Length: 160
Image (cartoon, rainbow, N blue to C red; front, top):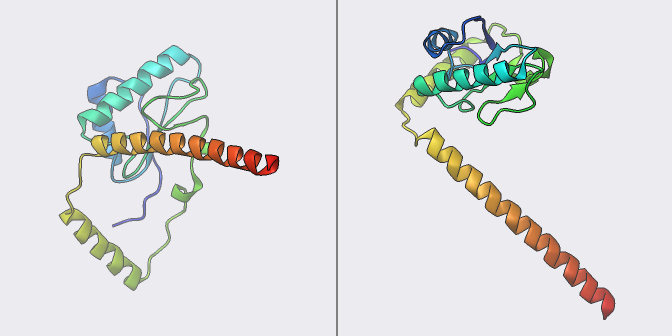
């Protein structure tokens, strides 16, 4: 097992079938990856990002879990399903570490983790993501209400 570092997917053809082959070859879902989109045209970049998302869904890989698939283009401000960066320098630094030779004990621990991870069966990541999003919205509502209550309590205390 190797440490997860960014892998680049190089392609000029953004058809879903070709993207599926390239993404599978790059190790999508097993390591973090990034792909460059058209830097000039936002409409074309959005279509390319949608094709990347469809290819990931076709491979049954969640776009963000366990490892993200970043799209890199300055043309898009945001994409609904894929993480986005304007340049390679904006990618998270924790996946950019140069791998060095692991000690024997570290390598045996990584191999043990891989064996245990292969035996795990998780819930559907799409369903889990929807649950997390709904919990986040409920927590935001609760935060707003408690902030308002705290303000009113302070106001009441000041009036007494």
